[in-house]
Image 1 (tube, helix red, strand yellow):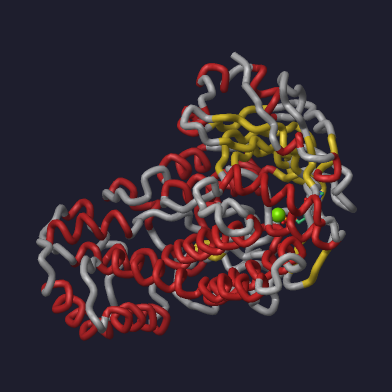
Image 2 (cartoon, rainbow, N blue to C red):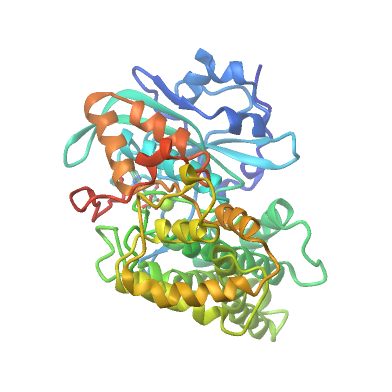
Length: 491
Ligand code: AMP
Ligand code: MG
């Protein structure tokens, strides 16, 4: 079989990218391929295990029809504008049209230097490759829009950081890799023609259904604001901290990208930061919604030259769209919280009920994920003991009055306890990619070439909403000595 590429991004003008061949890997080794994702993409499963596929995933041989380009972008990093970033350790090798009609980018990450590498080596240690595989696939299973992982390979080359690491390449799949920073790149060069082409490209590709009576740039902003607001609400509801919400890591398609320093909260704390380089907490859990708005403002600024001349009111319209972000976010978050708390109708005190629960979690440093899961158990205490997490987590004494209030609230609904619990179990995962498990899987792979922990974790996380006592080790909160306190960018 061969992959049938249709590379629409590579057909844009030459200033959008640089054509670069990947650097070959000396001794490629297959670690994992994603059969389910291959099906989605219409890739033959037997081909996935072929030598040809491995040569592609390792950057050794490009299949016919591949384009192999490093795309140009800029970005605000921790609030500071860098006009020249671009794929410094990644190559877009082509776009596949899935059987569903959806178009997907295939990208190699860690495949060697490009003209955008600046001081970097364009390589990736194996650790960040495995980390992204685990996290992105877990996010997908948790129902969050995200880039995905088709394959993880080892390269056989050494990668030098503070220490020497084995090298790896991740094959990443995304609806596209176009970022807020891609627009900022052309805006910084006052290249209005390129901006216009990029808007058209993105509207066709990601927003074909938006009302076409509005000017394209305004339509695009409206679409991206909506998707980003909903995306970040999903992160908040899961306790996911992205960690590096720079505008070059903010995708126009509304998918989560960049699993460098991200982490899931265990003990709940809205001020929580994991990333070693986020010294002032710009990207703390509780700041994420606000930073999302900031990134969208950067997008609006980049788009403004397209409309400002012809339409004096354009900036006001854009401001109105940006102002609408908060309401979309709040609505999505409130609905998500109702789902998590098992509320199928709306009452006045619901927002308070949710807010008080979060305050209590934070005051008592309760595990975020297990608290919601335990609440789901309590929705129907007589359900299967084997599916309950009571032996892993129980609410402290101080929750008694809140729990009474919640029981009275849910009792006012038409749902039976069984129904309520079944519904809550679909919104409150038992399993998340726990930082200590991710860490342990990476250490075993990097230091001892043992991949069992990695595979077991990826397998378990394909069904994050299913719990039985057999999956206990994946659901447990970390013991104090297991807690991961810092994460690193993995560059
Ligand atoms: P990130 O922190 O992953 O969002 O990357 C920010 C920028 O640094 C992007 O332009 C990357 O391509 C570039 N970069 C990160 N790591 C490397 C590396 N090892 N070699 C070359 N460029 C890199
Ligand atoms: Mg990035």
